[in-house]
Image 1 (cartoon, rainbow, N blue to C red):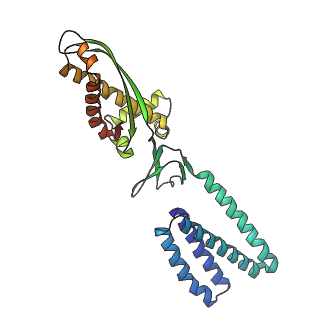
Image 2 (spheres, rainbow, N blue to C red; image 1 turned 90 degrees about the vertical axis):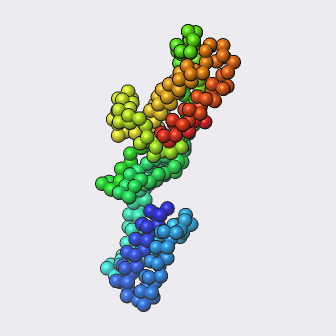
Image 3 (cartoon, rainbow, N blue to C red; image 1 turned 90 degrees about the horizontal axis):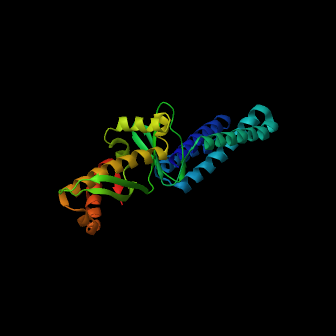
Length: 269
């Protein structure tokens, strides 16, 4: 909404300037600081209603300015036709802007880098695309719950009686998108390998939620299996003990896995 308010404020300023150049009336001169001051306040502090009001004022002033310019240049015909042409141009501009927006699906977040840091847009919503040169859309990360099935085989215990296999189902979600992007071990290698498996250029794969499902799922699966093997070896002697202590084992795996996953911005649920 702030972007829309800023565009509307710019249109107000141009329209007032055009009106004053055609009809240098004291009332128009008095309106300039009043409307511009109010417009600045809307840009920084106004919400949706303020943006709509400012856009309506900008539209009305721009039509009045177009009519005044048309009257001065081409008489009554220009006063009628120039606003029509202006409205047609505005309509085409709005259609182009709408088609240029990014649709952020529900349960995902779009990360856009700019000189001052990064902006995040949480779906479902439409947002403006990255401005060329100044901004870069570098990731679209899923925030919905994901599930990973882990099947570990040949698990060692402290005795000679080892486990043939053990299965886990892990539910998790991204809580910190910035950490999910930057906190994964061997990030560059993992990103490139996953993008190659998907047969997709890396810069495009990073914008696909399914890419992050693969990356995070593999990381969760690998860490969970390592944690499971470590806990079983340090705690249990026989497979029968594990069978009787499944709830305890699951709790310990979740605790250790959650501690590791927080460094990747992931919560084990």
